[in-house]
Length: 126
Image (cartoon, rainbow, N blue to C red; front, side, top):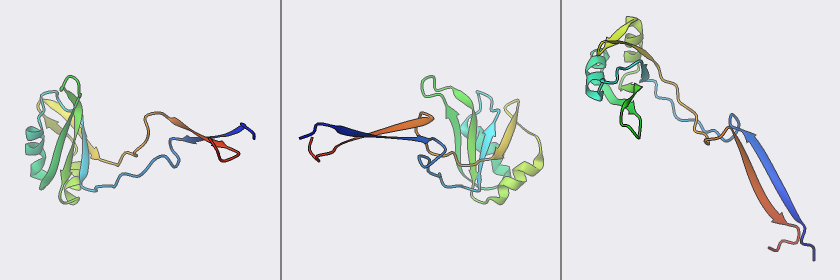
């Protein structure tokens, strides 16, 4: 009986099959350049003049709980995004902010490359 083993190594680039699409929300905007003092409430108050808002997020560092300087606003009507973009410049809490259409980020593993190692014995026994 042979103790010889086959090892199958499969490497895939992170841009291949390992990534799954996150659904697109046409009413979602990325808001960059936020002041560290900007709260979700002030972000909602500023952008509500462009349309009904369903969600507001100011992204924070998980350790320090300090703002990371960006966030997201989601409008119930995607036409509100066009209104925001048509205005040109935006200022909130003393800083020029940079609203952009949000595109979904692909879900992916933490590393750029993944090695999958599968071990199989020729005899079908382990």
